[in-house]
Length: 538
Image 1 (cartoon, helix red, strand yellow):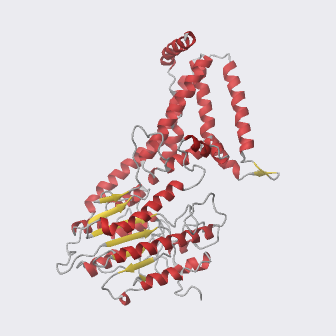
Image 2: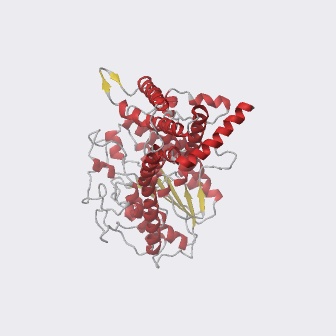
Image 3: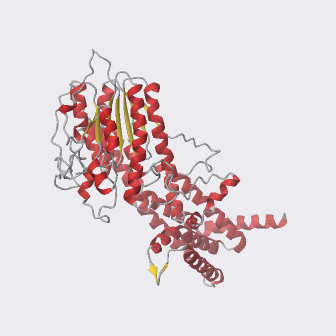
């Protein structure tokens, strides 16, 4: 008891010394790597996904500093040594990734047995130097505080700039959303439910046959039997998800910064805003449709408002803050730290036997798979749970990589060696689920629903590495179930920009007309057309 009291007394005295020497730099530095990671991924993640990691990093830093302060009894050296340990922890995963592809005399440098040993030796030598240094260090904290504060400026600016630019774009787009006054519901018959299903990265049939060595005709034959029109030569209007979805949901080609509709896309925040607040949603809301959406894990793809929104159940209370399943950002953050060593050695998952919910940290994509399975399981429940008329916006980021399941939906334990074969397996899996979903939607809907199954772009693969023309990314799955309309009126090259122009004109008294079907590769460039074979086997 006396010993503990003396240690507490020393900590209190050192607390005064801390204020004297101003030593916050370990606590500033511990959030820098995570803020940088957040800033780099800010357009792909909810900002709040990074909060728990920041809190844990601060707690870790406080724990390390406290232990060292008790042992060393020198606040300045304790803080310097704490910062050194943090540098090693947060740099390990990055260093490992850099060295992984480097081979010297037949040996890969990116191996834990080498890198872990080097890091340990460096920590011992640097610690010995710090602890045995006789130089005065009273001025060093001022310099380190300045350095860490300077480091934080860049990621903080990037995060704030993106958030402000995004908010401004949202305000501007909300003012610009225009509802066509001629669109109206028929008073003679009930309005049909509309299901807009986006299978992200689903390529066109001829591409699947030629490059993935897969015969996808059974799925197209199924769609034909269910009276779908499959636009077999359809191209996306843009090869980026944001450009494609912004154009489709606003039924027009996008304005560039000069106010012209050309091959140049506007900045990402504006595209995100055009997806969040779009003309299609506004029109269906004006038609008194119930708007139903799904959270697919990508905030910029979700709509700003909806009447019903489905998400993977997740309750974050004070009790389970540190025991909830980790999110995608936290998995990414973990893999950049020294925890990468424990992940690759399969040590952490063994902690589950002690009721510590590590939850497949060593398996890529488990959280994403859970999200995808939840969406696929929930969609067929909608006809009997949500009153009609309803518009369902269902954007599932699949079969788009990463490759997380095989053809039967079983979780992959490692990255597949054959990218195209893995892509084909994911297409096979999503086909089987779509067949069940379509059957249910058609059987349980009255009147017969409108169903659009459409991709935002073609395959997301390494076109350059596979020596495939990147223009092939334009070829997409595009299928329409349009009850009461003669499918012979449609044509094989119809593109997504005309999807809702067609639907509003044919079902809701619209007068939009169809636009020319133009396609653009990348964020700017000329209009492009790729060759198409209606029978890819020939």
